[in-house]
Image (cartoon, rainbow, N blue to C red; front, side, top):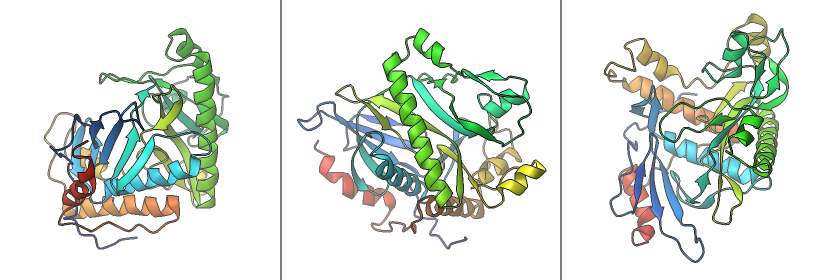
Length: 328
């Protein structure tokens, strides 16, 4: 669906000098608040900007992308709170979550339900290179691209906090390297498979296939394992459209999906994105990508996306909504 969007309603950053302890990521701008009696471990303000990142750099800012991601994650945190506790404390703005500060565990959990992917750590890439043993699993010969696995599998990787590359891990390696205790691994793996099962079931009810997704878990101030970051968003998950999957699988083509790669493909066709300056991305490409994100939100949640147009700009609105925390 193509909408007429106000492309000036964009949040390229959320630099707010009145807030303490800033940390600026590729997409989120974050601020750490001090400990309180209610939250002795402290809290963190996470503002989802509209930046879109690829090739280890920022390509553009996509209007309403930050609101889409925050609200999609909110939907899933609400729908899965009975499975695992999460970091959410409050939602003071459509682009903002205030969460408990957590010590992120050094293992990133990816759950996969299909033989898919294109990165070096994806099971399809490894399978096509001849591997049958991966991440502690044994896959049979004869599987085809994008085929459903007999059951969902965990494919954990090391979490490279220093900008290095994530590396595949087996459960035995996780324990041998002391990354997690046996009890922590059992708890995290149980949570991840239960979350993925819930996600797949609800996606199927919306005519979608949740193909794979990543989860980040951490320890709160009480030492409990909780889920943080985001969950089942278009940026952290691969979704296919159920209508059309079988035909694509039979012909060996890519299943229909929310194609967020339009900007990436446009850039690659015009330069070497790892070394060359990024050419200016045209407004029609920006608008197309914004519509893809909004379509994804509506398909995933079953809810109508309502952009928050209050305030002179998105940053002005966020500043106003976060002003109670300026003196925190």
